[in-house]
Image (cartoon, rainbow, N blue to C red; front, side):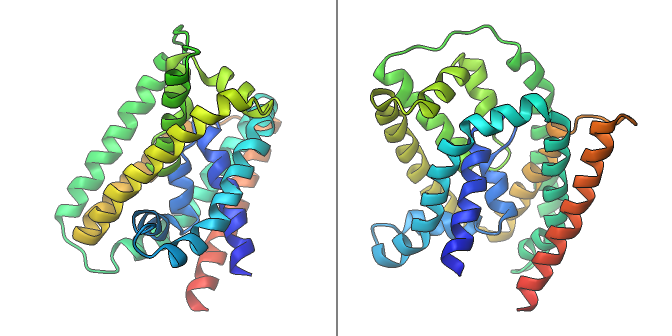
Length: 268
């Protein structure tokens, strides 16, 4: 049962890695797999069997999410942008109580609040710059090295909370080209993308695992700042038009559903 649950979680993380304005790392935190995922990645060559068995369903779901949602997410964000954004906001807000309990599991220090405010402010700054970045006119390159870089960017967006790889790819002028390579399964382009993705994923995971071990509460409050701040660039505003009302309803359902599931799993 846990295996299939992790496949589903991987699907969302993979989708978040390529969805416009969404961070796969934030979704990994929301799904409750972030800390264990980074630890398993960093210990992959130390305790291979245990780490591999945990990462396998997440990896399967992540790859499927990237391929399957490369077209679907693009379609949803074009035709149901408001509803999808409210849905993601509901998922994020619903996880706040559980995330706070997890962050304080090993104690709380007032200095953590400063770090929370710092990363929250950084995320707000990124959201202000996002409009300028999205309006960029850069053109991406088409060499092996360029696609290696694009894969590394997707890897960063998959594991660093609050970092949207799609925004970075738009800035590089490579977002549509990358989606096209994935949706058409262009092998000659997918090979360097995959290499860049894996390399960045493993390196960043190793660093984060080390930080969790040395400064658990500090790292979690840093992540909390990114997660809370990620709501700002996603929030589409509000109006009494039908898409906003449907979106608001989806947000409420998302909040209630995630809070209920979080409490159910903790009690179990």
